[in-house]
Image (tube, rainbow, N blue to C red; front, side):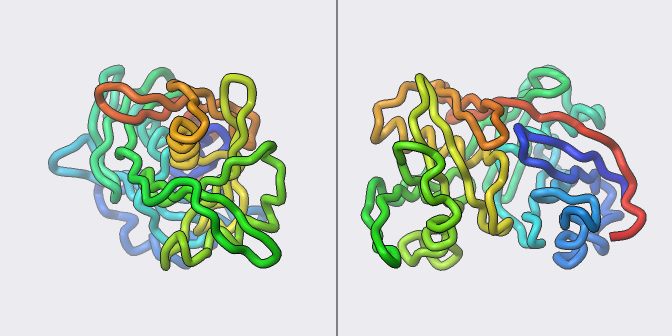
Length: 263
């Protein structure tokens, strides 16, 4: 199986070209779990599958490292846009592609940067207090392609690993759970740490989480758009809104090409 390893501001993926359907039988949940396992295989936060689409430039299918599918991945979408450019599908003009969350507009800004326009955030509630073992938390639930439970904090270090699994599965966020984002103001921008469902741990970046954080901060902290969101990798993502909707821009870099001989 040939792949390109991609980094989206620290979120890493295996990008696969499956327009001819030759990988259909290979891409099982068990295979994806194995190939994404670090140290014993290639290792990644997830797998990006590029498929043919009759109405758009391509279709993107995203798998978390646990083998399950997610509707959308913001950093994955940006990496997929650059990957499409590497395949000769995309140039310097905006184009449309489809994910399980809907149709997205994208633009390759350079060999290592892309912007995508996300599905409009869908707010379930803002600043609701929930009960946790030994305490409480105030969260906002926003769907930016996948659901995010956003907690505003004085510092993005506070108790992430203790609180994240509890909030990620809390009954207030629904049966399927949600990603959890701990967000703090930092100068004129935001800092964010994200615990992703399906990964069941912290990732170095999360694009849908950055958009959810910007949305909540604009509502509750009067943050102006566009805003810089610093992710755990130390890199910056930009989140803004224009006549096409909410957009996410930042690094989307091919790291290496490879061929998985065994997993």
